[in-house]
Amino acid sequence: MARSDWDLVVDNIAYRPEEALLAARLFSGRVRRWVFISTASVYHAFSSPGEPVLEESWPGSPAAGPLKPVDAFPYGVLKWECEQAYRRAFGENGFPAVMLRFPIVTGPDDPTGRCQSYLWRIARGGPLILPDGGRHAWRFLWFADAARAILEAGEAPGIEGEAINVADLETVSLEQWVREASAALGATVKTVEIPMAWLDARGFPYEASPYASPAPFALSVEKARRLLGWKSTPVRDWIGELCAWYREKERVPPKNAVYWEKEKELAAFYG
Image 1 (spheres, rainbow, N blue to C red):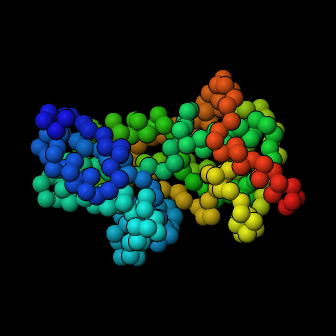
Image 2: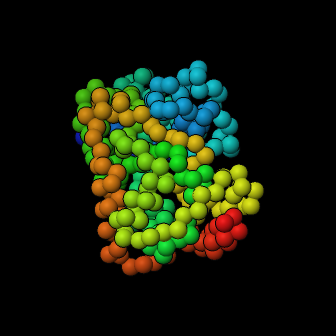
Image 3: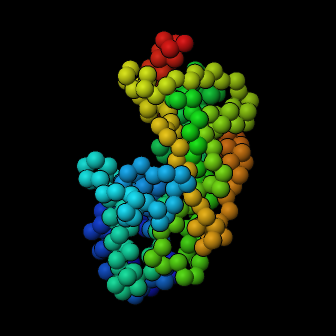
């Protein structure tokens, strides 16, 4: 691949800075645009971000504080260091890298089973625990929008060297997500609002509620709107599409269904 010329290369796998440096060296002068899929987790590689989460306000800025040790949060720290490697390559020799910071990407056949875990329990009526009431707002990213963002980043002029948040224009809380999904599935689900501190003290397996969050985390998408003309699929529309897919597929329990017994036990005990 490094012996050919390319219009667009999408790097979805670099995890360590040396991998990014190697890619920049091998493909220098051979690619018109390099799109690196980074992560919103780079913000958690520093101190807790505020709202909205802005590209320029946190990673690397004085307000962010020092970078955490790699062993404290390897995913966010190493992805940040990959970004820095590509940014240096752009500054030194014009390597045309663009960094897209994605939040949780959701869609049919999600290999993590995160969305399926909720749909599986909703379809069975619960109980479904909402840690801290599930009221903290997030921005997700629909899988088709993620693919479109990559293509737009491959074409937009003058964005080399930039890091760009890409996410839904709308925020949605876990409580809202469950309510919308229940309506789309035509299901009535029993939810139980329990403080996270209470759950933490009793060993609640958060794999059972992978969208639970101790704080709001809404990426700013103003830069994406400005540089990419960014638009996203309405949250209600993609939840409806996700639920339509779920109704049609074979009802195979997701991997984290093994935690449902513990969840039911804690819900009954708290209630």
